[in-house]
Image (cartoon, rainbow, N blue to C red; front, side, top):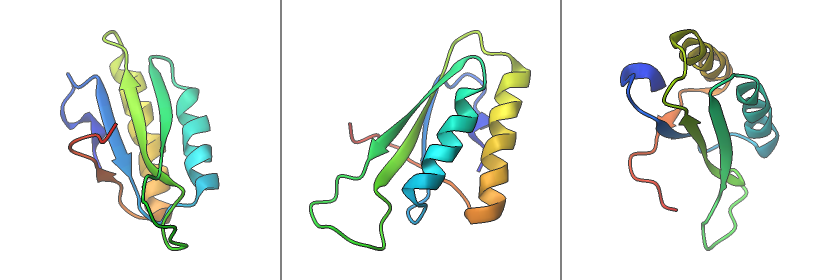
Length: 97
């Protein structure tokens, strides 16, 4: 999963459907350490409870317009770390906010 494919993007939304809430929170904590981004967890909105689904729908990453290339790369490294352990991130094309 390569969030940096479009270097001009100021926002991206990603998910991994089976990722537990605790891991989403861990990813968010790591990303919060990167200067120039903000991160939010988007809650699951399924009308029916399903144990196989995560409590989180997706992870919203917002970049400031002046974020450095090094910081974008750091975001990619963090996401790659978790992708290697849990599976590929899916990019959410149209946010349901």
